[in-house]
Image (tube, rainbow, N blue to C red; front, side, top):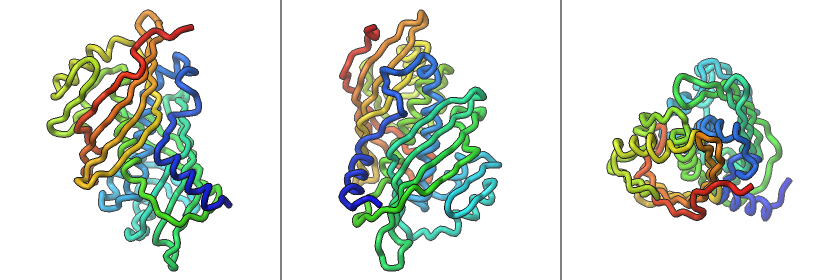
Length: 311
């Protein structure tokens, strides 16, 4: 069992830092870069897994939306096969509980059949399950598989959740803003990395009156985004972003602000590898009943200009 001091340290780190897989960006292979959008799409779905548990008023439909009809979900609560069984199980959970899920580690890989294997280690906090009012904390391990669909986002076919250990914690810390923000960050990355260059999915995650302040210019409407995706963003045949130094904050007006760094690598049509580093500040609007929060504004700072990778 961990000490209270170590638990608090782990939660502080989890709340401010998220890595995007085991490999550093410098270690990415060409195939890693070409598969990046599939892994981001899987991560977008994974962070959505927590939305119902952390904000049940959003409704269970958005939780079921990420599951295949024959999904298998296994945890310490038992096993559910199919979405109907899953609905019945979550319907039994008290909506008065407070739940928080801090993702400490997440790893993804694209399999030969196009499915994505996603494994994660998280810290789960609960307030309400213990009758004496004390908090519960547990380290959990997720082993999951997501199958491709006819749209960009895959769906879970298998989710296994194993208890690693229980821990003591004295303060409940909410994780909703971070998980809600990370789901839309990864979905955005999947959209702009997808070689199909299809802007249509972005309509779901753009707020009315959005403003994207990119280094290539300011975008304030969908036609501008479409032109960017087929223009500057299409200058490379493949690209991938590694997420780092992420933090998110729920604001009093219901919006979510976030800061995130991206290590970017791309491959030009002639095979040249490029790299860059950027820092983003986003503002999101949030309707808890929608599948994703929506991007209201993005401001980008270039930390390392786009350039060929030095051998």
